[in-house]
Length: 513
Ligand code: NAD
Image 1: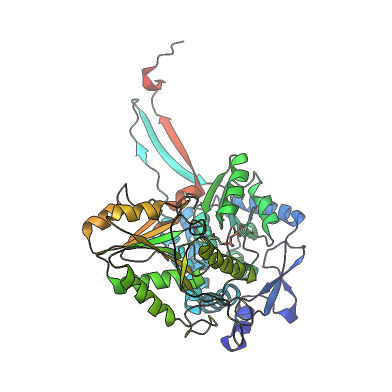
Image 2 (image 1 turned 90 degrees about the horizontal axis):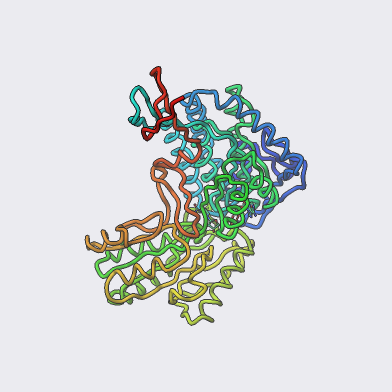
């Protein structure tokens, strides 16, 4: 870590090193237990963080609700200016924060920087949006009446995030919530608490420099229990939760129980359909990056390749060749393609999946395994594996958050491949590789992919912030980031104004007194 400048990065981001004590994050109430953050890169203890107790949570909520009372009065373009300044701070801290993301989470340095770039991009997007929080105007059926709709700030937004995008998911939510006039309470993943502290420190500076109330951005560190306080709290009108489908089902029920709104971004089981008209070279690049990038720990990672029988062997051979060239090791070293999994629990899930696919009738094509020895001391490095399988296998139906790719064969027309692609419980990302216009259009049509993201001639993995991001079915149905995703962070109000001296009723109803 030393040679990659982690100590300097921590210092710049205001995260205390081990010998300096325990971090809390600015404007943070935390009197709970101490949480340790170990790096999956080298197994070292990076730093410690104080968790929040239930009493701290109460103080956080008071600060947040108080801050909302004034923040909502600030004109939206001025709130945009705050988000613009936040984006500027992120630009200054891009290198340090990118390094911390890479070291604490284990993704490659380039992806760490890319994640911070996504934060900067969503800030830019939100700044423009702060002048475009438009409602519609309608023609009233009554003379002398005017109708329109407007969007008002919602209140306190609770954000629960996953370990694999430890900083970007928070920014996707906060940038839009802040321009909308909301205040945010964030519970980061307990696997990446230092990223949470670093982000909180960055925004706290902006808040201070603008003499704004601290409660605009709050941080609560801890495990699922502190998250439960948030999901059960009726002072929080919107919960945006990113993580596993298992977590999403619990959170959705808690929030629905109090008739709150939830925005759910849950697991995927993403497939690429490879038709006889596919460009094989593009297919292999897209599939390999999709399956092994971030060590298969993206919600949009490619899990299944559905390949036409006529080109199956060709694609298979090209994949085996490509996997043979992958370099596995320290993700801060840019020569490596594949970094570690987040922890040994994730390694166990990976080995379980490989055992299960064989037990259920599959055949291993590229052997997996856990790496040991020099450079692999953390015990979190695994070999990306490929198995030939069947879509009906129980293990194929599940999202294994690791670099395991299943090859599935189809015959006949692309409709058969679509049936396989849609034949899982999740509905996040999907892709087709084809130069055949009919196949591509069918894939995008109403009878095509049932996912929230459907791509042609690019892989499943990664997305730009300009589009709405999210998925259907067990992925939870939420949309974040671009397009009109901002609307969930606001409450819509329909207004009818009568500027006459009479009171005509709608639908011509007469009520004479
Ligand atoms: P996880 O579900 O274990 O945890 C996610 C977050 O939820 C953590 O902060 C955790 O503390 C919290 N949590 C867990 N149980 C809770 C409860 N009962 N109440 C309140 N909070 C609770 O997920 P993970 O292992 O951190 O992340 C991996 C998963 O996230 C994968 O399934 C991946 O596909 C998914 N993911 C989805 C998206 C998306 O946009 N669709 C993005 C990133 C990750």
